[in-house]
Length: 81
Image (tube, rainbow, N blue to C red; front, top):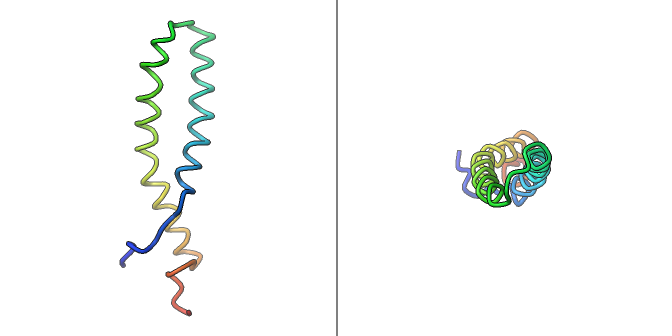
């Protein structure tokens, strides 16, 4: 099955931004209040975590949304016209 024409849009990226933003800010606040590290620790710690989590989650979430489009027969998947 050729899925090159299928596009999940910006849905996966937007969802990842919202969920990771909420989670990382919550954990960063907890780390700040619990351990009070210097600011350079936050600068060194959070960007690699955010980047790794985003890259890890983007492909599976895009695949999930395209599978849902196929399941519910949206767009070019519709064979009935």
